[in-house]
Amino acid sequence: MMYAVEIENLNLYIDGRHILKNISMNVSYNTIHVIMGPSGSGKTTLLRTINRLIDLVPNARITGRIAVLGRDVLSSDPYILRRDIGMVFQIPNPFPHMTIYENVAISARLNGIARSRRELDEVVRWALEKAMLWEEVRDRLNKYPHELSGGQKQRLCLARALAMKPKLLLLDEPTANIDPINARRLEDAIVSLKDEVTIIMVTHSPHQAARVADSVTLIYDGYIIEQGPAQVVFLHPSNEYTAKFLRGEI
Image 1 (cartoon, rainbow, N blue to C red):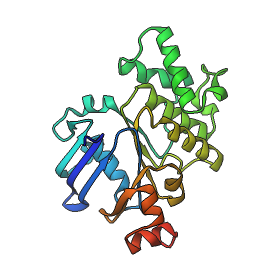
Image 2: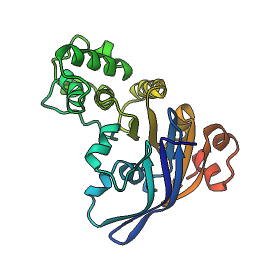
Image 3: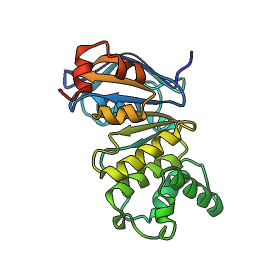
Image 4: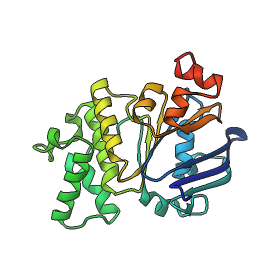
């Protein structure tokens, strides 16, 4: 079976410290795979390894294999690789000197998705609708992101990532710094997207993982503790550590 993401025996060392330890993980196409675990367990580092942002970290060394969409990640040009991989970070980071419209349109332009104004208009509207933000900003597309709430800024970042029409979307605790109402809107948007894009999402919240995940991986101290279909892991965890994490005891 072909997977959107295949990871085999991945090890990551930074300054000689062993950060990710023998990670193996497969993610099926058009599913939401949630990586969960406590802070400092290696979740975000794993995401950054998948799209080669780890290259920006001095003295990082990787062994093992990562394939995304059938392409070997470690031997690929990272700039070409990232044309197919969108990412939304934990802290909303819209471009402050671009309008709401321009924040979304720039991804479509840079990735060659749209060039004419009509094409850009269509992509911008589509991405904002998918991020469940269109109705809130349709009358102020020429305003700047500082006028938006934190949750709206994060949904704008999601729209910006979607406008590049990625095949894989990486979400690094996208609701960690926004209010509960916007967090649920963002979750709803994420769930609605999986027919169009494969999603890997990092969270430290078992409750959030239960709401959105098709499959899950639990990481602790750089090791995979448990993984499998979400229903199986949540209802019948095979590891006592997993059970404690799901009960909020860790």
